[in-house]
Image 1 (spheres, helix red, strand yellow):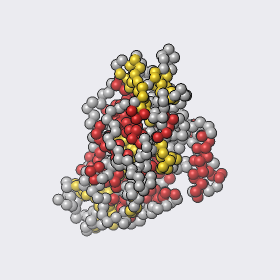
Image 2 (tube, rainbow, N blue to C red):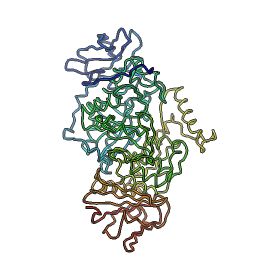
Image 3 (cartoon, one colour):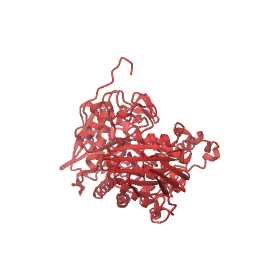
Image 4 (tube, rainbow, N blue to C red):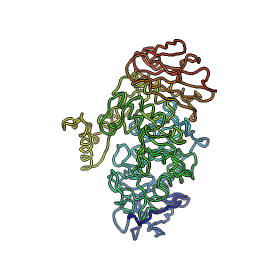
Length: 633
């Protein structure tokens, strides 16, 4: 765009679902956007049925009605007599991303969640999972069977990694190409609906990870229907950007927004996590993400919208009335990066700017971020900020010790608890689950799963070999993999064994030491859920670094206060500042991470001298106190 050109101003674009095959009482409607085509036909796999020629409509759409065609019929599109192509808005690809599409009637499913009202956005405890490796079966049905355990843990929402149809039978889902169709590797659409219905019955919201910044490298027929879906005016790590602000972008935006609405409408999804929104490049107004948020809110005001955005830009969670995008929260990895550097020593790559000091961990908890950029590109650090995050709730930041990226993008898929001692992991867990930010757990973290979570794919050759080579070359910049022979030891993403090694072993959660870790997670989440000072999103917070190894946190609301002292490393005695905890005000211990039933005990001694309190740790750990009388009325 030249300096004299004006970015387009976009208007409301989606009110009702229209794309794809829509079942009606007498047959099925078909609608597809193919602006460069002169003729579009629907070709049925049932050869006894003649092809249906679609009528040309405004703005490059083609539509038509096939009488006596219902759910289960399989079909292709054909443009100008060319090859047979799957529907870009297909509701199901039973034979994979290169096969025919199937007509699905979403209204035939019998929902039982009429009384479901969702969850409070400020009370979210998110449990991230990958359908293929979460259960032994690796399917929607298998995942449904394990949700009761997630609910009893104390999570309030599951966040499912992308399920849109992707090439092959295994993958993370970020290479999806049929964005409206749940992957056939996981089951049928009604299996996914049943999973959501089950989650709601158990009191769990369902958030779905969606990818709008790029499509996968194999099976992306979307671009055959309209070259306008991409643009060379903007570039992303995956190549040309999705066209959100150039010629034809109105319909491109409509496609993706309709996709978001369809997950909510047809699958009763409670919210979406938008992948890599920093790669959704848009010079128009309003920004695509802001428009998507407005459309989603129009359809379901209670929907939860999260962003993954490396900028941690404050505009993302500002309301539309304040000039923001209006999202509820964003993944904020600063907490993870500092904790990982302190406990595991990571310092290369994107960990390099992070100090890993308890001072900066405390500041990150206080602000919710440590580095952030505005959408205009100005960088700010929490040290330089004049004020705390202006009016934002701390729950607008999602904190974690593990997620699919931070585990799976490690060479051997190691989780944090694989690389540090168990006591330090317990202490860090207490800090994560009792901090006021929204906590996220990655599947299996709650019992310190022995299994890794590796990067895996199932792509055709030669693409598969290129992915394997690229994956190993990525680690060449790290000291541990400077030698080619060391890089060769990194598991092959294309190997079925890499995928199988990532599948959770549910049997181990009832055995020690895993069962003790699970009990700790359950106890901490119960405390977060029930204690007034911890469940209040608007309470006061004081968080301090007491020394290079210890962080203190006091959470207050008018009727109660909780104090959390966390030693992340080593042993020793620490005097607690009276502004945090004073013997002049009665207190009691609610929990320590170093007592039974969470480990072989190494009790934390509590010494009171006059008005001062000192704690003696034999190893890393955390103590949670309740002040019997609040310090402030």
